[in-house]
Length: 77
Image (cartoon, rainbow, N blue to C red; front, top):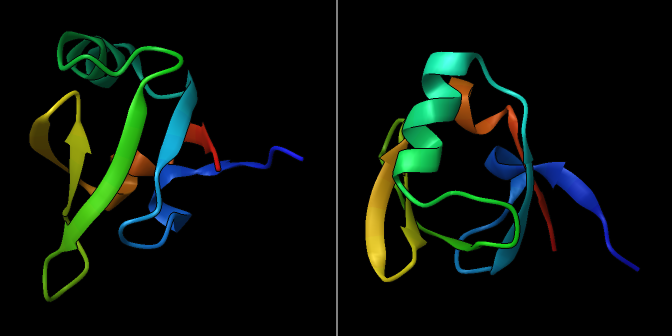
């Protein structure tokens, strides 16, 4: 059974798939430009010592997303 949860709750090295973006339009546009579209595979790779931001592998690239932005990105595991 699929479970939809915010991206910031995914443990490190656990792959997930993007379901929806519920962020403001500026952040939404930035995420889409980075390749975060529905169905995209996302893997949390590294967390900073403070836990913000977290680095994610997306389409073969590593991108850092702040915790407040990752709370509005929903994925399935």
